[in-house]
Image 1 (cartoon, rainbow, N blue to C red):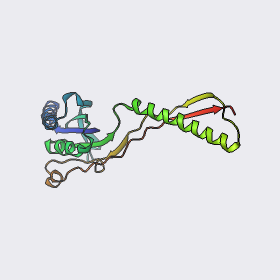
Image 2 (image 1 turned 120 degrees about the vertical axis):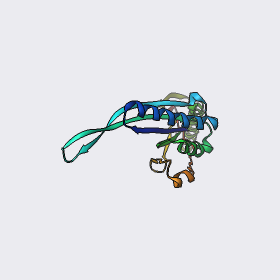
Image 3 (image 1 turned 90 degrees about the horizontal axis):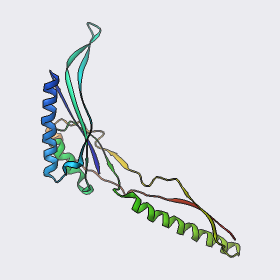
Image 4 (image 1 turned 180 degrees about the horizontal axis):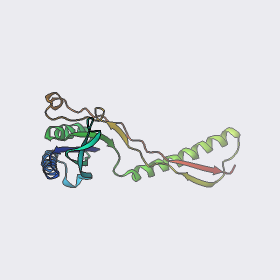
Length: 196
């Protein structure tokens, strides 16, 4: 499971925004590590500090309104059955946005090879059935073509419609993230030509 988090901090100066963001991010990563997430499974995807602006209707222009620091990172875990507990811990520790959760297979090639072997067996079986129905003997396979296919695909599930986490909201703190996942499909396709 890959869980996408953002910590956003707004302060009067860039330095204060950065400091606040670092403090909250450290609280979140500490909480995740206490649940067994490895340090190398927490991966920064995007980091920025930007001037925050608001539009002044009276003056008809944009004006500076402090600074915002963003730290977007991904957390990977093999503990897919308890993905919600990582989200709950991050929200309680101060994360401001849970973007999404995606599920994938760490070694899809292993399963793709199995699917490819099954595809060849299925094609051979179909050819044998066709030959029997036609009343002819099945000859040798004269060509095999592996069709391009994705080894696997990830299923992405939005978390509470991209949950904006306000940690001062006791209702949000009390509610646990209930994350479910489906089996991941891996498919292989072949075209086999036989002589009859």
